Length: 281
Image (cartoon, rainbow, N blue to C red):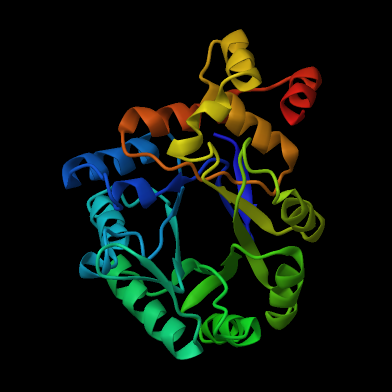
């Protein structure tokens, strides 16, 4: 499988987004673990999760615990890099909240370390700006966590270009990743992608297929290009993203082994310049 870099570390060019196996509509635990194992068997070495990937506040941390369980018992030669996020909260009934206070993020990191069963988190990302807390304070907490070694790399999610520049400055040029929504039906984060390309920061598109409600967006040219190569529209979509920049590492979610196997195969698909131009249209 192709490789890309997060910081100084090479990871698979396609990652696995863990959210679908933990939120509403999730599969049973056995299928969730089977899906993670299928990703590893397909050559995926990068898994993205978050403490808030759960049904609600009653099983907060579900996805981190599931990933830790799936990784236990795998061969010691399997080098897997797990990224997680903090700053989102879950409410009774399944709602989402925000908490970007430094003291909250410090506690969240300690809880994530415990759930993942590691001494250092590979990549820790501030999940989303909290209007009640200045970004400088939230990102300042990430700087402390970098400096004290609890996290290896720091990232941000759902940041605009000005916020990305601010975060990178606060971190002393050590911002390693930006995770923003990007898909055929959601291209407004092109400026963030271009900035990451310029700065050499990994760009992790979340919901790269547009989400369940936007599944139809992969009809038309993406399906036609996929058909021409004998592959799915999803593979054509991921190959299009990978061609945009060497910093792009898509993280498609999956709740079935077949889905992540199909996504992982996109790293073998080479699109022509004409095809890329058509998909850009």
